[in-house]
Length: 144
Image 1 (tube, rainbow, N blue to C red):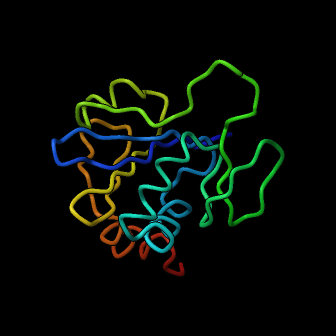
Image 2: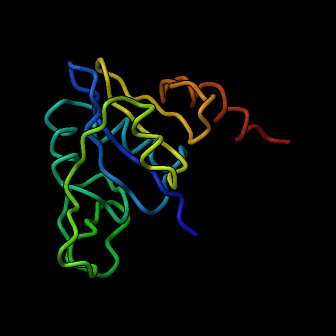
């Protein structure tokens, strides 16, 4: 089963430009990749320009089908809907993004030089990915 997510950039005017990612959107998968592979403006912009993804990887590689290596992004382009628009979409703000993408479990937003994450729960606040890993991740991986 897919863990769907949106990955976006908050622009200076407050809008969010985002792409959809179908597989593995949970924080323990996307978090390290976003923090380590997409940590500068040029890399982040290149990721958003890729358009909607089947899966997120640390390398930007366009793929027209099949399964990628574990470290490659795969676009959804070429998976059927010839008329579909897989480019990044613009949303007024986080509330608009959540309202229009209700099937996504996680939302990753890059703003002010940092990656943030929140869930589909409207009461969940944006948290830095670094902060999430220092708290929740340490608790999840602590030996019992």
